[in-house]
Amino acid sequence: MDFTGEVAVVTGGTRGIGRAVAQRLAQGGATVVATYHENKADAEATEQLLADYPVETAVKQFDVAKHEAVAATFEVITERYGTPTILINNAGTVANSLLVRLSPERWNRVLDVNLSGTFYCMQAATKQLLQSEQEDGRIVNVASVAALRGWAGQANYAASKAGVLGLTRAAARELGSNGIRVNAVAPGYTDTELLESTGGHESEVAENTASGRLATPEEVADVITFLASDAATYVNGEVLRVDDGLVL
Picture (cartoon, helix red, strand yellow):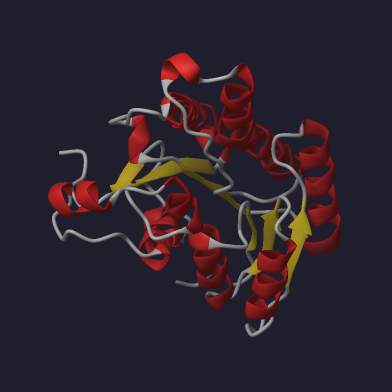
């Protein structure tokens, strides 16, 4: 897919699905800014990987849950690289706990990162687009099949991702007339560090997916980059499941 001339921001772009998306976009010719919160080792590794592509790339650190930090970073990105025309909201976190034991701190952190962080980045990117002469923009939010199905111990995570789906659909209706498409993907079990940190999914994957295996980050990245490309110009407000039949 050709992303020449595009400026893409990928939050949570230094590992897993985000890193795979950043590589796909750079391979397609986009200027890519991958963001991260605190893992410097992953950030440095991603910076080296992206440096292999013949395009301008960068890695930026900020917390998507901090509104002022998000707004300031997007201003810096626009000044340095140009108005972001592609935003991939991939940054996310988990803090699993049964509902009766779920602390306000765990609830709030997951909602702050997964839902509020997505909103803050969408708002910042949209403001930059509307102030520029760009005629189109593409936003792809990474949700989860947890928003559609739900699992015990993930009330905060499922609620945050369900919120992302509602936000996606509302924003698509609101921004479509400005040439900004907003879509989402809902991955199932994917072979990432985030999934590994929660553990114990082998039987669920084996029994409830068509192939009996995890998705690779690259398989999810292919769907995300499709939504961000000119091959999906009439796709707006859509949620594409990448779950191998998990929620059927």
